[in-house]
Image 1 (tube, protein in one colour):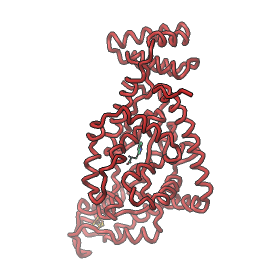
Image 2 (tube, helix red, strand yellow; image 1 turned 90 degrees about the vertical axis):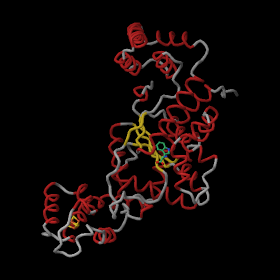
Image 3 (spheres, rainbow, N blue to C red; image 1 turned 180 degrees about the horizontal axis):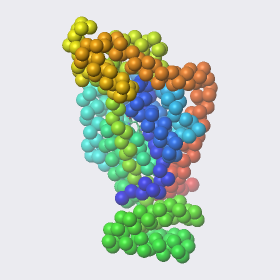
Length: 405
Ligand code: TRP
Ligand code: SF4
């Protein structure tokens, strides 16, 4: 059982620095981040150590990629006033936590993660039989758990990593949450909430433990959540006691599945740098226009007088994203009857992509011109992240008996 409600709905996500971002990132990830930052306390970070797990032989591209990516985030509307933006390696607590979690993580759990074998297969030209690569998902678990994040927006391919994170958290809590005299401490903590709340808590706990009453469980969680006068440790004890276990030091996160981006590439396959079919957010308008103008269409439409089928045309995929119903039926009709030409058909797409990117490019330019500002934004985010990370590490060290002086 997890206690998302206890984690004041904190959101955390990271991105490997892969250079300038494209429309696939924008539609698949960044637009989602921009929405989430209004609703939750968000932590977004550059996973530069994760990049090293696959690029350890060629790290020179990482620094530029980091700053390019941050500028693209800001340009896309990720707002440093709302979300905390930082760089993984600037919060070294992640590494300490990764090390400590490695002590309790069975090798088999890591070997079983599907991406481990998949990526080794896919990136055959690289030697990924390394300790660091095996630990990739555990480093990710450390990233997530150090902020006690409740929600982790990820794509389908990362769900197994969040699942591993949950298992590691559970194991950690199981081993280290069982302090001596736990029950007595939980009972003590309960009293600190005051008579009325304590009574309610007892009633809910009983209903949940004896009858599996989930509503009671949720009500009890909400009750704990609303307590102003108890310490974090006591709250964790009461969360754990509620569910019958020990203290919940590391709450289990949930994946927040981002809908697969429907953003097609210029050739109709998924937009991806490895297919060379991308439109980068900061490509020059003239370059974008040319790329769209020369993109392939239904191959059966050789001459202007041949009719075509939008279902067989990558341009139609763009209309699905960018055009309203009126334009879409104009395309359907005009294409099938050879009433419109392909150049004509592409124009509304070109206009829509350019107008979508215009404000993004303007903002990007402002940030490009102020590298100091970008550095400061990140420095501030790193500091805020470090504050939270240090708090968790203090608890973790204590739980693992490392707090001697
Ligand atoms: N592994 C993620 C990816 O490749 C990046 C990442 C690293 C991440 N740490 C994370 C994502 C923590 C979410 C939460 O996309
Ligand atoms: Fe594709 Fe439009 Fe040409 Fe039809 S008219 S083939 S949809 S570009």
